[in-house]
Image 1: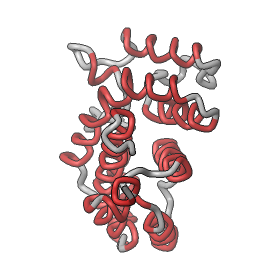
Image 2: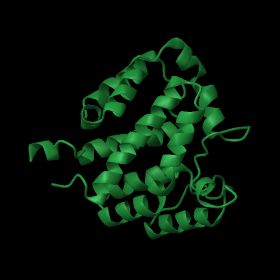
Image 3: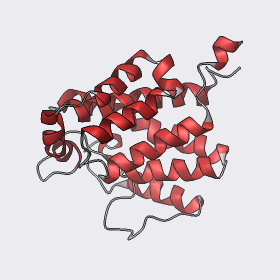
Image 4: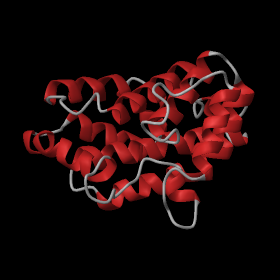
Length: 205
C-alpha cells in the first residue's frame, strides 16, 4: 500500500507545478540566470515527481546544470516556439490543435471562454489574446485546485487541456533548439501524464 501511495503527488506539489508552468508561459522566467535555474531544480528535486518519474528527474537535473550558452539563447528559442513573429513551432493555443485548419480564435476558443465564465472567471483584457492560451488554462486549473473544486478541475482537464497539451509538448520537444525549452516541455509532459493517471483513477489507493 505504501508503494501505491508513493505514486500520488500531494495537492501542494500539484499546485507548485501549475504555478511553475503559469510563470513559464507568462514569460516570467525568460531572464533567469544560472543561479535561478539551479534553485528551481533544487526545489523540484524535493518533491515526489522527481523521485517517481525518471524522465522528470533527468529534466530537473538539466535545469540545475543549465550553462551560459543555454541561458543566453533561451529567450530566442522560447519566442520561436510560442510567441513569433514567424510561424509558431509549438503553438500555445488549444484551437491550433483541435480544428481542421489548425487556426486560432475558433469555436474551441469560445468553448474555453464559456468554461471560464462558468467558473466565475474572465481573462483580463479579454480579446487581446485568445482565451485558449495555455497560460490562461493553467491559471484556471490553479484557481480550481485552490478552491478545491475537484469536479470542475477534472472536467476541464478531460475536456480541454489533456485533449491537446501532449501534442503541444511533442512540438516543443521536436522543435526546440535549446536545452531549457526542451527540458520544460519534457517536464510539462511528465507532470500532465501524472495528472492524467490521477484523474483516471490509475494511481488511487
